Each structure stands twice: as C-alpha cells, then as structure tokens.
Image (cartoon, rainbow, N blue to C red; front, side, top):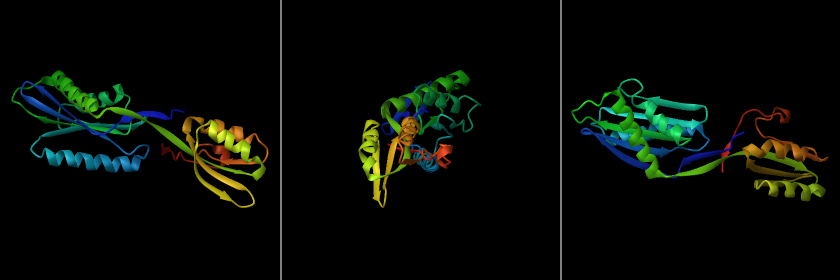
Length: 219
C-alpha cells in the first residue's frame, strides 16, 4: 500500500491579476492522516480567509485528504470554473491533507470561463509554490509479544525496518508496541509470525490478527 505522501511544508500565499481582477490564493497544510481533525481545520481556515476578505464575493476552494477523499467548491462562480482548477493544482502536485482557497475581487471586466479557470489555477499554484512541499509517511501500529529468549530476533527485525518503539512492557512475556511504515507492516508482521513463540497483533487492516480499521498514524 502507498505510505508516502507529499504535503505542504507550511502555509503559502499567492496573487494573480487578470484584467483588473485580483485572485488571492492561500494554501494550508491540514492534520496528516486524521480526517476528522482535517475537516475541522478546513472550516477554521476558510473562516480565517473569509474574515480577512469580508468584502469578497467569492471564496472558492478545494481540499484533498488522501487518494480517495476530496472536495471542490465554486462558491457562486460558473460551474467548474473555480473549484475544479484549484483541485487540479492539488492533483498535479500530488498533494494530500491540503486545502487551497482562492479569493476573487472583480476588476470590472469579465474573464469568461476559460479566463476564470486559468486565474484560479494560477493563484492556487502560486500559493503552493510559496508554501513549499515535503513528505510524510503513514505509519501502522504493531504489538509484538514474545518470550525473552527471542529478544534478539525481534529487535533485529524491528531495526531493519527502522520501526519506532512506542512502549515496552514485561510480564511473563515481553510486549513491544511499535510504529512501522504502513507499506511494510504486513511483511514485518508475517516474518515475525513465522518465528515460533512470537505473536503479532496488527496491522489494523489485517483480518488474520482480529483487527479492523485502518488507524494510521503520521511519522
């Protein structure tokens, strides 16, 4: 599965002018791999833009949380002339958990649908370029239970995958909670299960481990 996603390095702003109209672009990074928090952030960021441009007639936007969740809004502009080209900026830059909003001030000359598409796209792209990009990894949790004499085998496998240990517990067995790249989680879990005496719970989408979900965490 895919576990590396380009995201914004920070907030960005852009400005595009066309025949007297001004298009102010804003790019916002959203909470990574947390759709509920990202939805709240979208609402807060859009309110922030609207308060800063209370006289503007149009605040158009698009967001994308991951490969399968996105939304685009024209906010009164002709259908497909604003939200779609803004979303096109997200797709062309392969950006995820990102919001782009563009505010338009009418300059007195109509641009036509083609002109609007280009202007909204340009303002959004300028904001992305101003923000810069980086990459985040989706991480998956595993819980490993094993007898102490198998510690060397477990630690060697964990270190090879550059997994992060989040908690260690000791009873009659050793229990290790780790975070590993989601794309490598199934392979690591299976390789450990192949060693007699090691039990692995996870990753969340592995039906054989009694889990459901995914509950992916950011790196």
